Length: 304
Picture 1 (tube, rainbow, N blue to C red):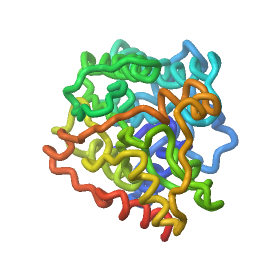
Picture 2 (picture 1 turned 180 degrees about the horizontal axis):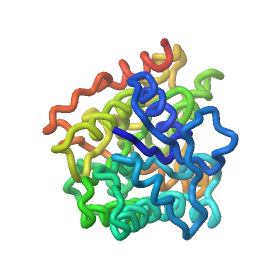
Picture 3 (picture 1 turned 180 degrees about the vertical axis):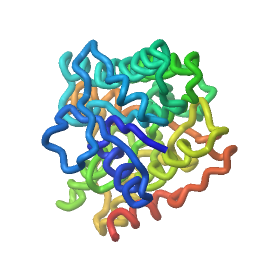
Picture 4 (picture 1 turned 135 degrees about the vertical axis):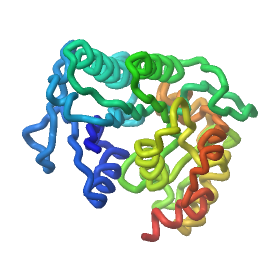
């Protein structure tokens, strides 16, 4: 199977590529800068408003779309928010339109689209447990995820098997939220934000990579899947477990108002949001998590 990967140089994409290399799979990575890339099989990301070349799409049997500007990369403003949306929605639209282009030309096209999304789709609720059948929530990220998924869904009408994977917090040492929240513990000032009772749904990056590659191979998989473990924890619990693993107690608490001052709108949309998400469909499909418990996941990440 020939794979095309957008976002292949990102936090999750790098791990997917590493696994593909170890398996001997044939793949190409889509990059904004295809000239200065350590891997030879790189495709240039089309300019805004343009499509992939028909030959690129014709030579691909599955697209793994992980593209998206980092949500926690910098303080939010109108420019950052626009890039968060465009880097997801417009690239997904480009992929679907490129598939349609090949159909009209009578050329081969991918039959599978694995499209990233996020549990931010559900908005926020202090107590509700969300499954894949739960409705779309409110807020900036909920709107982005809805538009993102709507673009991916258009490929279904073209005969493509589409999967929308709603990522929880992805845990790993070289990206995502974990390095940021672990740093204060190194100085003995680790702690939680707000009242600490907001729910956090998470997944070890290794489990997410296995999930993505299993989704490529399993033809019966289709539709929406929550990509998180069944064991959500509160932020206070998360920080206490992290402190134990790092040998440093969770000592501090940053009030919600101060978090908003420090981080702006991102605090309300990401750091203080409560999302207790359950991967009902993944469990029904028989997917096995290697790291279903937070303590085991964090121990593996920091001790390996």
